[in-house]
Amino acid sequence: MKNRIQCLLAATAFTFCASVSATGLATCDSGPRSGWQTIEKLEKQLSERGWTVRRVKEDGGCYEVYAIDDKGQRVEAYFHPVTLAPVPTKSR
Amino acid sequence: MAWVRVWPKWQRLLHAGLALTMIAALVTYEGGRLHELAGYAALALVLLRLALGFVGPMQARFTAFARAPMVTWDYARALWQGCEARYLNHNPLGAWMVVLLLSLGAGAAVTGAIYVTNRFWGEAWLIAAHALLAWPLGLLIPLHVAGVIHASRRHCENLVGAMWWHGCKRDESPDAQGKRRA
Image (cartoon, rainbow over all chains, first blue to last red; front, side, top):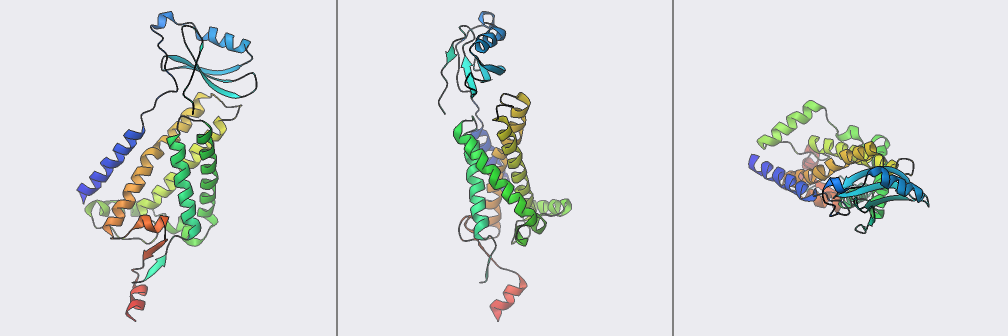
């Protein structure tokens, strides 16, 4: 009985681990951090386009931006830290 | 053999809806349109089930199947030793699993719904709370299924069929035994 319960618990843990392999929506080949432009510069560039930037964090070597764009839409966008160019994300 | 309808159709449909919407939301964890739709649907179903847990039909109320902590602990020990009792309604561990799944589902759906408003979009603490409430479901749902499989084998019955299909379980109460003999 204990064996069977242990087997079921192990199968459960495996299912969980297999399902948790979190990845971001994009990756950037952005090199050493010393070559990156600052978050402030990216925020300035975006606010000039009419975006309201809520949060910037790093994900997969990119800057990941949560913002409300100039049309009032919620956006989650990726930018290359060296060029500050938009990075296409996986469609979802 | 006497059979008793334990899960009426509304409860089986609600269970199927909860299972499908929660799993859909987990699978699409990166967000997007489908994740949000699954989340809103799950929110509506969870709130409905929670409400019925207090004011619904007697057998579906939390008071009908939730047991005191000590009773649950004794059941868990009996389970470990392979001599746990059979329950027609949820067993004590299954009952707490129901409560846990519904509570986490409600919490995850509410925080998610607030997060995708323009006012709260990008709030780090809110998305952290959402993840903290939602990810345990990825562990608890497989554990719930494992518990169902275990109980099915222990008592030689098909609990998956009872909850997803016909809604019936074997009635082993003395009353039913008497009727069978008569």
